[in-house]
Amino acid sequence: MDITGTAALVTGAASGLGAATAEALAERGAAVYGLDLPSAVEKADAPAGVTLLPADVTEEAPVRRALARAEEAGAPLRVVVNCAGIAPAARILSRKGPHDLDLFHTVLKVNLLGTFNVMRLGAEVMARQEPVGDAGRGVVVNTASIAAFEGQVGQIAYSASKAGVAGMTVGAARDLAQYGIRVVTVAPGIVDTPMMAGFSEEIRAGLSAGVPFPQRLAQPQEYARLVTMVVEHDYLNGETIRMDGALRMAPR
Image (cartoon, rainbow, N blue to C red; front, side, top):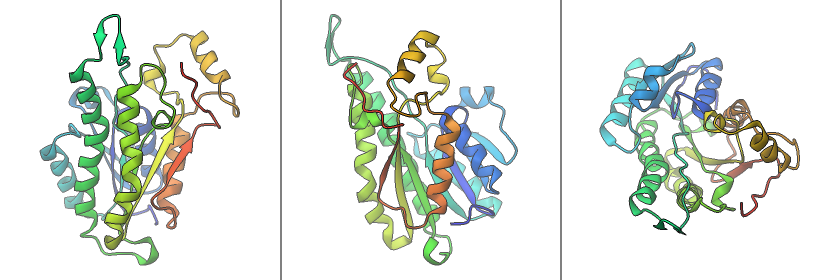
């Protein structure tokens, strides 16, 4: 899939993985439409080639509006990347009592339902594009986490939501194969995103020491490079790719 001259939709695009991915796709010649919450969009500076739009990924109407904006611009939508997500921590049972049910519901809604919502609506638009040989009509890249496979203490909601994202991968690839749309999931390890900014250097060093090699935190730009590789590699489909430096998460 040639990225140049296409349109791309990236969620969570105001910061972290989404911002790095939106910029990388724009640098390769895509017209990028980045979605994020209104409060995040207001504070962000979009790089050249990236249009930031306010949208809650769990709602249908704003995602449809963003996709319509992309279609009206004329470039064919070939790429959808789901980076939006939240990661609050809570145990199933603690001194405060059982895990808050609303919190669990919210995490699944944002991380799993939000990913599904953008994937289904993006696929609808992609299916209207003209196919380009073996490259087909486009590709959806979703974001899971290695927590989907080795959830730590306090990650029950996050792990469940990301396991759901990974679990959708093969089924979605099979559902969308008839339209020439690929689906690939990336499962990052510990990435140095704004969510990590609140941790002390001591904690960050401890996290880095647990990574076999390279013994450091991953960078958002490395995730973005993997996404662009997935987009350009037409035979990658129905796969969940770990990007974690061989890290296997300990219980805590």
